[in-house]
Length: 435
Image (tube, rainbow, N blue to C red; front, top):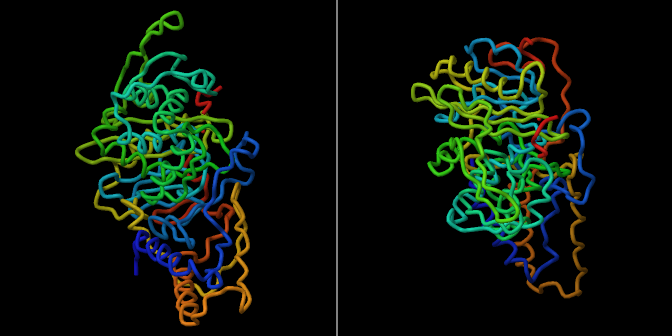
């Protein structure tokens, strides 16, 4: 039976209150906590050796259905053959309206996202900040690494313009200024991670507001599709994605005013709803987009690819063409969830089995030792029994066993509809400015 994560959190909170005077009845520690980003670790400079880890919800639950529990390629039964030239390490095509996933490769692979992570930044801040609020540029903005829109110290920039600069020019300086307006980088990253979990995007770990590489930072083709579907459904953010040009103000003695243009490489695609590119050394080329045709909306994400034989955006265009050719009546291989409320709770387990940690996972500390009898523990044995029972229920329901990171060797056969196929099936990655 599915349970709402909010209800489980409430149970945990009630348990904490109940056991506040009884530390001896603490629940077992989770041996595989949620992955975290580690800004103190060396900045990654290449994709993970052997491929990225595979993500999941707590307890190893595959978000969107068991059909998406694959490192290879899966296609809806009855769909036409996949297009040539789609060679990205991970990608996904889904109907944004119904949520049906039509096809995917490594949908829950936790790839470095590069500037496609700015879709989550926008999603998190679009309704938190007043677009008329004016933010003053700083030296820190000027010194941001990678792609920048051209903010200068002393310049005055409305939040609405900074949102445009974030989307249209992938400005890392704009992302930094927006985070400052939202209370700082750390609170903004915390809000981004909370928003991701709210949506059911359990593969995503934000470690920056811009997508610049941070050890442990990740997203997945599945999660990027969740973010972009939300953006195109919201009139405020949908309008930002399609803004063609904007005007940056001049700063006396520092910078003349200048125009910026939308750099979405599929701006001319029929029915486009916008797109967001990304590139870093560790992520390589990444891209997420959506388009509408005859009232049907599709969302496509592409991660971990190079510019040859096809750019990430060109691979996405072929996947859009293919997706629109798939009959809308076909059942998908999984579905995009609307929120974490639609993700099933993990099945109860009696014991938690330790599993290998993925990159940048923080090892859980040992459970607190229970005090010996007479060391100040609560006198009521009934409270101890109740707390232990509640702890066992929560541990079995919430903690569960997380799935180990799996590296599945490619199967020998090519894809057939509705079946898994090798990662390379089909004939045939801020610094977000590629070399």
